[in-house]
Image (cartoon, rainbow, N blue to C red):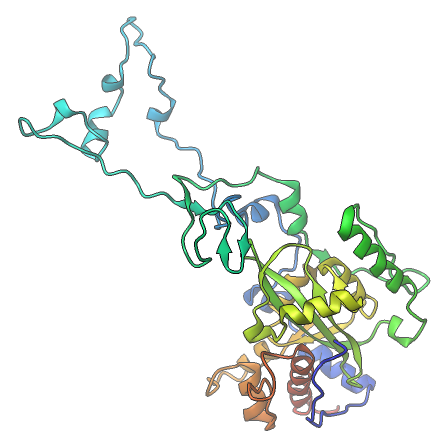
Length: 390
């Protein structure tokens, strides 16, 4: 991000030699270690994507109910016995057992003469608003955004199974290889209206970028992302920062305008405000959508590139990116077998191990992804120094 806070920390420099590259390779995690930390290493199956579905009304995470194997569910009310007699509702197999378990009873089935039995209706599971939010007030009922929905349903309404929109939203992409010309092939997507105009503008920026070493894939980079929350409750990429691991030079540092409506930018942690995003959109300095952000990052990446992160599972998820050559400084710290005093947060590890203060609340509001990328780089350099040169 061009207006990123200038850092006063003296970051380390490290020479890009075969020995140092080999050290990084030794620190890379295998598939088992990454999966243990919930990294996504394969494209999601339709069943896995369906498990991420949310109610189309209230956006709550929903699970589809499996079809019941109870034979009562398959007995129609007008079914008959083999001898031709009607099989009424009260004659259905197990109907008495159902009443014992609390099925609503009729007035005549009350145990005490003259008493009435009332079944308590279940509480609605789905509550939502039909209006839009203006100044933190819903237009449908004039209630504050913190208030529960004004419309209720007994059950949630999941999207259709294998819905194309949900499938596309959760589609992961493995790191592509470079073409013979050494550049990624831009894959246009069908869009219309304002989003198409924004994407065409970004494509022109992508294609008109000057030929420079930045288009050549690097052996190792350090990455950090910031995320906000969409109106559906999903985490959305709003800023991406990447630096060359060896030189520390900035490869990418931009705000990312999500392609979905946002609830908030999680400013307390991300450091990104509505004003920041609007200024970036107005000035044309932001990236439009996670897909374009991922493609911009891939200009510096190949499948063999080592990506250094700290707790990077969420970063890869926000980018919908599959990459297997990863060094996570959060995972590295667990190798010591010693519980870290104060936890394994980036802020705490940098202070305890390196004497570097990052994520200072009195300096800026929220985190700075560029600073965090440089900080996790420092932690990995510290681990490299523990390895012998031969």
